[in-house]
Amino acid sequence: MLNNGILALAAAAFAVPCCQTAERKPPEMSSMQNAQPAAMSATAQDCDLRVAIQASPTSLLLGYEFRNRSNKTAFVFNVVHRVGPSGGPEADANLVYVEPSGGSVILGKKIIPVPRRMRVEKPDVPYVTRVEPGQAIVEKINLMLPLRIFTPYDEPAPTALSEAAVYFELGFFLAPDPSVAEQAGAYLVVDPFPAEKQVILRAGPLGRFPIQPAQR
Image 1 (tube, rainbow, N blue to C red):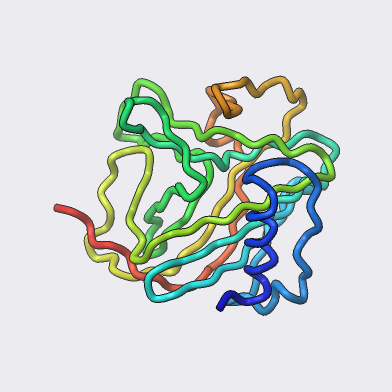
Image 2: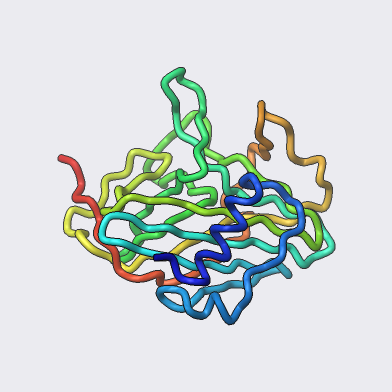
């Protein structure tokens, strides 16, 4: 049974289509503090991230709220995509980067820098969600356990990593001019965008979870 914290986040995500920027009543902090483990939060540039999770032996449900308290428009890099059957980008609300980082793993909705030793024709940049001043977005992510390493670049997972502490990172930036985002089908994109210019909100550790062994 889901605890009160994740219920509040998940209920908001079910009630309103993912990534809309309409104002939502935030989850009660007292309820979020009962999450498994305790609710986690981060703040930067007058923007807040709050996270709660619910885990079972086979799955991980993560709910988060991003709130823009600044006086500028925020763009959040939260619509991760991969190459679909047609050869074009295909987005999925449950798609999240699963990135090894030392002895930990990061669940990321952000721009991942191109590895130094790799050359690519074009860096991978997730689609963005626009969040106006005073507004917030709520999203839920359903992941299967064990977690499978996934990044936009073909980097091998550490072979010895069978279980790890897991964190969640969300990338965003405050736009001096909201017109920097362009329409790309049903989504908004700000591309190119230097990875080092994004602001990253980090929450965790969420707990320790199993990692699928690297494929040889």
